[in-house]
Structure formats: C-alpha cells, structure tokens
Image 1 (tube, rainbow over the protein chains, first blue to last red):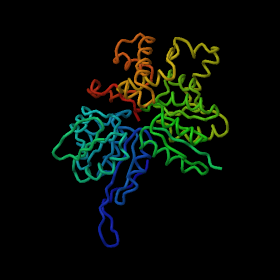
Image 2 (image 1 turned 90 degrees about the vertical axis):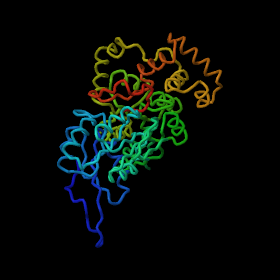
Image 3 (image 1 turned 135 degrees about the vertical axis):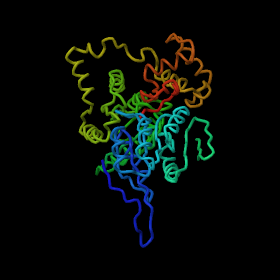
Image 4 (image 1 turned 30 degrees about the vertical axis):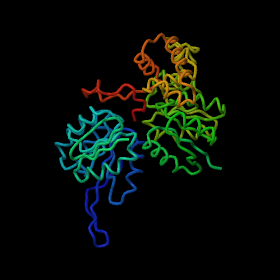
Length: 160
Length: 240
C-alpha cells in the first residue's frame, strides 16, 4: 500500500495549486490498478493510499484524512456501506464515492443514505470516474447508473 | 518477438488494470481487448494472439463458452480463465472448456504474470484449489471429479447455451436472432427445444437454470445489507 502524508496545497511556480488527495479502496488489486490509471491522467490529483478491505479502509481514512475516498461495496471483513457510515462519523471532511458492480437504484439509495456523495457503476467507471471525483471533491453529488431512473436537484445524473 | 496478449473483460477498469500490469513486462504486448465473449472469439480469430486472458462472467457470451469456441477455431490457442471463484463446478467447467490457466481475479496482480510465463513454456497454471481437485481426482481415479456432479450442461448444444444466456439476460427472441444472425423463427425453435429438454416452463425457470449453471452470474450484495432482494437477478457482469 502506498501512502503519503497530508499536504493538500503545493506551490507551483509561485501559484498555489490545490491537490485533491484520494484514497482507493477495493479488495481486488487489479481494480485499484485500473482506477489508478484513470486518475493519473489528472494533474492535481494524488492517490495517497490504498486499502483492500473495510477495516484497512477505516484505518487509512482516519490516518490520511483524504479529500475523497473511492470505495467498493462488496469487500471482506467490513463492507463498504458500513465503512461509509463509520467514516462519515470519524472523518466528515472526506467525501465518499462508491464505485461498485451493483447497478441497482436501491443500492444507490442505500449508499447515499449511508453518507456517500457519489455513486458510479464499475462497468462505467473508466468513463465516469473523473467527472465523479471532480464533483464530489467540490462537495457536489454525482450519481451515474446504467439502469436506474434517478433524479436529484443537486446531482449530476448520467445514463448510458 | 513479443508475446501478444488478448484481454477480454466487460469492465474497462479491469482491462486497464490488467493492461498496466502486463505492459510492465518486457516482451509482452496487449494486441487487443474485448468487452464480451463474442468479441473475444472474433478477435482471437483475427489476431491469433499467443495468449488469451478471458473473464468468465461476461454478457452476450460467457467466458467459458467463448473459450470453447476459441479452441474450436484454433486448438493450439492458450487461454487463461479469470474468475471470481474457484468453486469446484467452475473449475470443472474451465478445464472442460480447455483453459490451460485458471487465475482468481482477486489474485490476478500476483498470479497472472506467472500464469502467462507458464503458458509460454507450454505448461499450465492453476490455483492451489484446482491442483487439489485434480490431485484428488487422480488419486480416486476420477471419482472425485464426477461424484455427485453431473455435467453442468448435460443436454444443451453450444448454440442452445448461447441462446439460453441471451434469453436469461432479458433479450427477446428477435434480439437474440439479430445478435446471432439467425432468423427469429430459428431462435424460437431453439428456445422451444431448450425448454423441452430442460423441462422448463417459463422464462423465470430459464433464468434460474442459467444462474444455477453459471451461464450468467449475479451480483451478491454485502451480507449485512438488507438489500438482498433488491439486486437484479439478470446481472451478467462479474462481481469484481
């Protein structure tokens, strides 16, 4: 697991650049690797840590205090919904974006009720992840599904 | 000469992860990617890769049936199956389909390089669970491999399995016919034969059969969630 300590803002030729610090949580290393390849495209985004289960995610989120936690739902030890609820209590400044295989409006509702700011279906993650992190890092809600009919006054809503 | 690899997985994020992992290896190149089993079969035929890495749970044509087809086209093709489970039944099907490598998706970052190296050396690569099952089968002279386990799809032809998958995924006979370049009437005839052979009476029965026999896979919600009933049954993508 890679990690770096919190800085948040760095100097860039005299100008201040805000760094968005991101924690990746998924039990499959190959998925984390894929998520990284998408995120690396963006200057100003830094993956500060990775976790492979819910317990590790909670430890990391408390220690690293990232701006955004990208979180899977189905994971060993502690599932993502429980992690989300607990993380919202421990580190309320960290916004949570679910990236999950569950293409279900009920699951999305459950995730938002647990305190998540965003919900992206894994099959569309390569397309939606960048937009989703842009939104949730600015504390805006982002939901994107392939099946669900969704509506929300402050949401960016996309369907395929 | 570089080892050419074809990647087949319906999740782009997984393909990107696999691609990043494999491209670090000098002498290997990703010659193509496929988003479902049908495309994997077509691209394997066009590109003749040295190794095909194929996910089991894919829409339109699952990875096991795609593996069978790829090996029908080219019996020397080397296929590594990626799977979320090494349950006995899945192992049997993968071996029966002709896969020479069997890697758990959760361990892909660790095992895939070894699996490709094994296939390059004309060897096979299996998880410890597969080796255990094969050894048990050998020691008991094949009894373990067949005990209480009738063939998973005892009576369906390859075409009938394809149609079963498409119908179980929610497609109409007309849509299935269009995908398979068949007439709707032909698909209807296959459909009737499938229902008769399997003694099924409704599309719901067919979906249950397809799930039980791993023709399609479903997403499982987290155990502590109360949403078990809310997850759609017709999902075909692998729970990664």
